[in-house]
Length: 320
Image: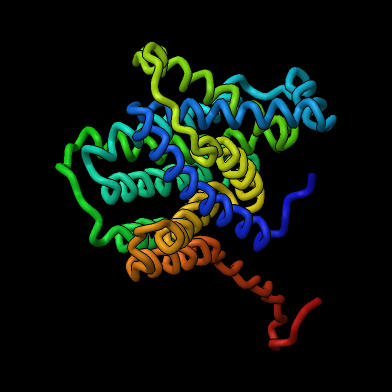
Protein backbone atom coordinates (compact mmCIF):
# COMPACT_ATOMS: atom_id res chain seq x y z
CA UNK A 1 0.00 0.00 0.00
CA UNK A 2 1.38 3.39 -0.98
CA UNK A 3 1.81 5.99 1.76
CA UNK A 4 -0.84 8.70 1.90
CA UNK A 5 0.12 12.24 0.90
CA UNK A 6 1.58 14.05 3.88
CA UNK A 7 -1.41 16.37 4.61
CA UNK A 8 -3.85 13.44 4.44
CA UNK A 9 -1.64 11.27 6.66
CA UNK A 10 -1.35 13.99 9.31
CA UNK A 11 -5.12 14.53 9.18
CA UNK A 12 -5.63 10.82 9.86
CA UNK A 13 -3.27 11.05 12.86
CA UNK A 14 -5.17 14.05 14.24
CA UNK A 15 -8.37 11.98 14.05
CA UNK A 16 -6.48 9.21 15.83
CA UNK A 17 -5.71 11.72 18.58
CA UNK A 18 -9.40 12.52 18.92
CA UNK A 19 -10.04 8.77 19.28
CA UNK A 20 -7.29 8.64 21.92
CA UNK A 21 -9.03 11.31 23.98
CA UNK A 22 -12.30 9.37 23.81
CA UNK A 23 -10.52 6.12 24.65
CA UNK A 24 -9.02 7.69 27.77
CA UNK A 25 -12.44 8.77 29.02
CA UNK A 26 -14.00 5.36 28.35
CA UNK A 27 -11.19 3.36 29.96
CA UNK A 28 -11.04 5.63 33.01
CA UNK A 29 -14.79 5.41 33.54
CA UNK A 30 -14.77 1.62 33.19
CA UNK A 31 -11.87 1.32 35.61
CA UNK A 32 -13.63 3.54 38.14
CA UNK A 33 -16.90 1.60 37.97
CA UNK A 34 -15.24 -1.79 38.28
CA UNK A 35 -12.96 -0.55 41.05
CA UNK A 36 -9.73 -1.54 39.25
CA UNK A 37 -8.09 0.73 36.64
CA UNK A 38 -6.17 -2.21 35.14
CA UNK A 39 -9.45 -3.79 34.06
CA UNK A 40 -10.06 -0.87 31.72
CA UNK A 41 -6.79 -1.65 29.96
CA UNK A 42 -7.64 -5.37 29.81
CA UNK A 43 -11.05 -4.77 28.25
CA UNK A 44 -9.58 -2.20 25.86
CA UNK A 45 -6.98 -4.59 24.47
CA UNK A 46 -9.25 -7.61 24.40
CA UNK A 47 -11.69 -5.57 22.34
CA UNK A 48 -8.90 -4.64 19.96
CA UNK A 49 -7.87 -8.29 19.63
CA UNK A 50 -11.45 -9.32 18.82
CA UNK A 51 -11.59 -6.72 16.05
CA UNK A 52 -8.27 -7.98 14.66
CA UNK A 53 -9.53 -11.59 14.77
CA UNK A 54 -12.70 -10.57 12.94
CA UNK A 55 -10.55 -8.86 10.32
CA UNK A 56 -8.46 -11.99 9.89
CA UNK A 57 -11.62 -13.98 9.33
CA UNK A 58 -13.04 -11.76 6.59
CA UNK A 59 -10.09 -9.92 5.01
CA UNK A 60 -7.75 -12.16 2.98
CA UNK A 61 -4.99 -9.49 2.87
CA UNK A 62 -4.71 -9.59 6.67
CA UNK A 63 -4.17 -13.35 6.62
CA UNK A 64 -1.65 -12.99 3.81
CA UNK A 65 0.20 -10.37 5.83
CA UNK A 66 0.51 -12.61 8.87
CA UNK A 67 1.58 -15.49 6.66
CA UNK A 68 4.47 -13.32 5.50
CA UNK A 69 5.87 -12.85 9.02
CA UNK A 70 8.34 -15.70 8.64
CA UNK A 71 9.56 -14.47 5.28
CA UNK A 72 9.91 -10.84 6.33
CA UNK A 73 13.43 -11.20 7.71
CA UNK A 74 12.85 -8.56 10.40
CA UNK A 75 14.78 -8.62 13.66
CA UNK A 76 12.89 -10.11 16.60
CA UNK A 77 12.77 -6.75 18.41
CA UNK A 78 10.85 -5.23 15.50
CA UNK A 79 7.77 -7.07 16.72
CA UNK A 80 7.78 -5.56 20.22
CA UNK A 81 5.97 -2.33 19.38
CA UNK A 82 2.96 -3.43 21.41
CA UNK A 83 5.08 -3.13 24.56
CA UNK A 84 4.97 0.64 24.15
CA UNK A 85 1.19 0.67 24.08
CA UNK A 86 1.04 -1.57 27.14
CA UNK A 87 3.44 0.67 29.06
CA UNK A 88 1.45 3.86 28.54
CA UNK A 89 -1.91 2.18 29.23
CA UNK A 90 -0.60 0.70 32.49
CA UNK A 91 1.34 3.80 33.54
CA UNK A 92 -1.55 6.26 33.49
CA UNK A 93 -3.65 4.60 36.26
CA UNK A 94 -0.61 4.63 38.56
CA UNK A 95 0.68 8.12 37.85
CA UNK A 96 -2.41 10.29 37.30
CA UNK A 97 -3.91 9.87 40.81
CA UNK A 98 -0.60 10.94 42.36
CA UNK A 99 0.62 13.65 39.99
CA UNK A 100 -2.59 14.85 38.38
CA UNK A 101 -3.48 14.91 34.72
CA UNK A 102 -1.47 18.06 33.99
CA UNK A 103 1.96 16.88 35.12
CA UNK A 104 1.43 13.40 33.65
CA UNK A 105 0.43 14.77 30.25
CA UNK A 106 3.29 17.27 30.06
CA UNK A 107 5.86 14.66 31.11
CA UNK A 108 4.44 12.14 28.65
CA UNK A 109 4.59 14.60 25.76
CA UNK A 110 8.13 15.58 26.74
CA UNK A 111 9.14 11.92 26.65
CA UNK A 112 7.36 11.41 23.34
CA UNK A 113 9.08 14.43 21.79
CA UNK A 114 12.52 13.32 22.97
CA UNK A 115 11.77 9.81 21.80
CA UNK A 116 10.54 11.02 18.43
CA UNK A 117 13.71 13.02 17.86
CA UNK A 118 15.93 10.10 18.90
CA UNK A 119 14.04 7.44 16.94
CA UNK A 120 13.96 9.54 13.77
CA UNK A 121 17.64 10.43 14.15
CA UNK A 122 18.62 6.79 14.70
CA UNK A 123 16.60 5.57 11.72
CA UNK A 124 14.62 3.09 13.80
CA UNK A 125 11.44 3.77 11.84
CA UNK A 126 10.95 2.42 8.34
CA UNK A 127 11.43 5.83 6.75
CA UNK A 128 15.13 5.91 7.59
CA UNK A 129 17.18 8.57 9.34
CA UNK A 130 15.84 12.09 9.77
CA UNK A 131 18.44 14.68 10.79
CA UNK A 132 18.36 16.52 14.10
CA UNK A 133 17.66 19.99 12.71
CA UNK A 134 16.81 23.26 14.44
CA UNK A 135 13.18 23.23 13.15
CA UNK A 136 12.63 19.70 14.44
CA UNK A 137 14.00 20.52 17.89
CA UNK A 138 11.98 23.76 17.92
CA UNK A 139 8.84 21.86 16.95
CA UNK A 140 9.38 19.37 19.78
CA UNK A 141 9.88 22.16 22.34
CA UNK A 142 6.88 24.07 21.01
CA UNK A 143 4.77 20.92 21.35
CA UNK A 144 5.73 20.51 25.01
CA UNK A 145 5.04 24.18 25.66
CA UNK A 146 1.66 23.96 23.93
CA UNK A 147 0.60 21.02 26.10
CA UNK A 148 1.80 22.83 29.22
CA UNK A 149 -0.36 25.80 28.22
CA UNK A 150 -3.35 23.52 27.65
CA UNK A 151 -3.05 22.13 31.18
CA UNK A 152 -3.32 25.50 32.92
CA UNK A 153 -5.80 25.30 35.75
CA UNK A 154 -5.67 21.51 36.01
CA UNK A 155 -4.94 20.06 39.48
CA UNK A 156 -1.32 19.23 40.20
CA UNK A 157 -0.37 16.54 42.70
CA UNK A 158 2.85 16.15 44.64
CA UNK A 159 5.81 16.22 42.28
CA UNK A 160 7.31 12.79 42.94
CA UNK A 161 10.41 12.62 40.76
CA UNK A 162 10.11 8.87 40.20
CA UNK A 163 6.56 9.14 38.90
CA UNK A 164 7.46 12.06 36.65
CA UNK A 165 10.28 9.99 35.15
CA UNK A 166 7.86 7.08 34.75
CA UNK A 167 5.58 9.38 32.75
CA UNK A 168 8.50 10.41 30.55
CA UNK A 169 9.28 6.73 29.99
CA UNK A 170 5.66 6.24 28.94
CA UNK A 171 6.08 8.92 26.27
CA UNK A 172 9.32 7.32 25.07
CA UNK A 173 7.52 3.97 24.89
CA UNK A 174 4.84 5.39 22.59
CA UNK A 175 7.55 6.69 20.24
CA UNK A 176 9.12 3.25 20.10
CA UNK A 177 5.71 1.69 19.53
CA UNK A 178 5.12 3.94 16.53
CA UNK A 179 8.55 3.24 15.05
CA UNK A 180 8.53 -0.54 15.50
CA UNK A 181 4.96 -1.02 14.32
CA UNK A 182 5.86 1.10 11.31
CA UNK A 183 8.77 -1.22 10.51
CA UNK A 184 6.47 -4.24 10.57
CA UNK A 185 3.86 -2.45 8.47
CA UNK A 186 6.44 -1.40 5.89
CA UNK A 187 7.88 -4.92 5.64
CA UNK A 188 4.70 -6.96 5.71
CA UNK A 189 1.70 -4.67 5.64
CA UNK A 190 -0.33 -2.46 8.01
CA UNK A 191 -2.72 -5.30 8.88
CA UNK A 192 0.18 -7.39 10.17
CA UNK A 193 1.54 -4.42 12.12
CA UNK A 194 -1.87 -3.94 13.73
CA UNK A 195 -2.23 -7.62 14.62
CA UNK A 196 1.28 -7.95 16.07
CA UNK A 197 0.76 -4.81 18.17
CA UNK A 198 -2.39 -6.10 19.83
CA UNK A 199 -1.06 -9.61 20.39
CA UNK A 200 1.99 -8.27 22.22
CA UNK A 201 0.23 -5.53 24.19
CA UNK A 202 -2.66 -7.76 25.26
CA UNK A 203 -0.27 -10.48 26.42
CA UNK A 204 1.69 -8.00 28.54
CA UNK A 205 -1.40 -6.32 30.01
CA UNK A 206 -2.98 -9.69 30.76
CA UNK A 207 0.16 -10.85 32.57
CA UNK A 208 0.22 -7.65 34.65
CA UNK A 209 -3.47 -8.09 35.50
CA UNK A 210 -2.81 -11.65 36.70
CA UNK A 211 0.18 -10.63 38.82
CA UNK A 212 -1.74 -7.67 40.29
CA UNK A 213 -4.71 -9.90 41.12
CA UNK A 214 -7.11 -7.84 39.01
CA UNK A 215 -8.72 -11.00 37.62
CA UNK A 216 -8.95 -12.83 40.94
CA UNK A 217 -12.13 -11.12 42.13
CA UNK A 218 -15.37 -10.84 40.23
CA UNK A 219 -16.00 -7.13 39.69
CA UNK A 220 -19.41 -5.64 39.02
CA UNK A 221 -19.41 -5.01 35.31
CA UNK A 222 -21.49 -1.97 34.27
CA UNK A 223 -24.20 -2.46 31.66
CA UNK A 224 -23.60 0.65 29.53
CA UNK A 225 -22.37 -0.58 26.13
CA UNK A 226 -20.24 2.48 25.40
CA UNK A 227 -17.87 1.60 28.24
CA UNK A 228 -16.63 -1.38 26.21
CA UNK A 229 -15.71 0.37 22.95
CA UNK A 230 -12.16 1.32 23.99
CA UNK A 231 -10.79 -1.42 21.74
CA UNK A 232 -12.44 0.16 18.70
CA UNK A 233 -10.69 3.43 19.47
CA UNK A 234 -7.45 1.54 20.10
CA UNK A 235 -7.50 -0.07 16.65
CA UNK A 236 -8.11 3.34 15.08
CA UNK A 237 -5.22 4.89 17.03
CA UNK A 238 -2.71 2.19 16.03
CA UNK A 239 -3.76 2.38 12.37
CA UNK A 240 -3.45 6.18 12.45
CA UNK A 241 0.07 5.92 13.87
CA UNK A 242 1.03 3.42 11.18
CA UNK A 243 -0.19 5.79 8.48
CA UNK A 244 1.48 8.83 10.03
CA UNK A 245 4.91 7.36 10.74
CA UNK A 246 5.25 6.14 7.17
CA UNK A 247 4.57 9.59 5.76
CA UNK A 248 5.87 12.03 8.39
CA UNK A 249 8.24 10.25 10.78
CA UNK A 250 7.79 9.59 14.48
CA UNK A 251 8.21 13.12 15.86
CA UNK A 252 5.65 14.85 13.65
CA UNK A 253 3.25 11.93 14.00
CA UNK A 254 3.45 12.19 17.79
CA UNK A 255 2.83 15.94 17.70
CA UNK A 256 -0.16 15.51 15.38
CA UNK A 257 -1.56 12.86 17.74
CA UNK A 258 -1.26 15.28 20.67
CA UNK A 259 -3.02 18.00 18.66
CA UNK A 260 -5.88 15.57 18.06
CA UNK A 261 -5.97 14.62 21.73
CA UNK A 262 -6.33 18.26 22.75
CA UNK A 263 -8.98 18.82 20.09
CA UNK A 264 -10.80 15.70 21.26
CA UNK A 265 -10.64 16.91 24.85
CA UNK A 266 -12.27 20.16 23.73
CA UNK A 267 -15.07 18.29 21.98
CA UNK A 268 -15.63 16.06 25.02
CA UNK A 269 -15.76 19.11 27.31
CA UNK A 270 -18.54 20.46 25.10
CA UNK A 271 -20.42 17.20 24.58
CA UNK A 272 -20.36 15.50 27.96
CA UNK A 273 -23.05 16.44 30.49
CA UNK A 274 -21.64 18.77 33.11
CA UNK A 275 -18.53 19.42 31.03
CA UNK A 276 -16.64 22.70 31.49
CA UNK A 277 -17.30 23.84 27.93
CA UNK A 278 -14.69 25.59 25.81
CA UNK A 279 -11.47 26.13 27.73
CA UNK A 280 -9.26 28.70 26.07
CA UNK A 281 -5.96 27.15 27.28
CA UNK A 282 -6.88 23.83 25.64
CA UNK A 283 -7.93 25.57 22.41
CA UNK A 284 -4.68 27.56 22.37
CA UNK A 285 -2.68 24.41 23.12
CA UNK A 286 -4.30 22.53 20.24
CA UNK A 287 -3.55 25.36 17.79
CA UNK A 288 0.06 25.67 18.99
CA UNK A 289 0.58 21.92 18.70
CA UNK A 290 -0.60 22.01 15.09
CA UNK A 291 1.87 24.84 14.57
CA UNK A 292 4.55 22.62 16.12
CA UNK A 293 3.76 19.95 13.49
CA UNK A 294 4.37 22.52 10.76
CA UNK A 295 7.53 23.90 12.37
CA UNK A 296 9.02 20.42 12.79
CA UNK A 297 8.53 19.82 9.07
CA UNK A 298 10.45 22.86 7.91
CA UNK A 299 13.44 21.83 5.85
CA UNK A 300 16.58 23.80 5.41
CA UNK A 301 17.19 24.96 1.89
CA UNK A 302 19.87 23.11 0.05
CA UNK A 303 23.01 25.21 -0.28
CA UNK A 304 23.27 26.97 -3.59
CA UNK A 305 25.67 25.36 -5.96
CA UNK A 306 28.88 27.34 -6.28
CA UNK A 307 29.85 27.85 -9.89
CA UNK A 308 33.30 26.53 -10.71
CA UNK A 309 35.54 29.40 -11.58
CA UNK A 310 36.91 28.98 -15.05
CA UNK A 311 40.59 29.52 -15.69
CA UNK A 312 41.80 32.67 -17.38
CA UNK A 313 44.82 33.21 -19.56
CA UNK A 314 47.45 35.86 -18.73
CA UNK A 315 45.41 38.44 -20.65
CA UNK A 316 42.33 37.81 -18.52
CA UNK A 317 40.39 35.92 -21.18
CA UNK A 318 38.38 32.79 -20.17
CA UNK A 319 39.91 29.50 -21.16
CA UNK A 320 37.67 26.53 -22.24
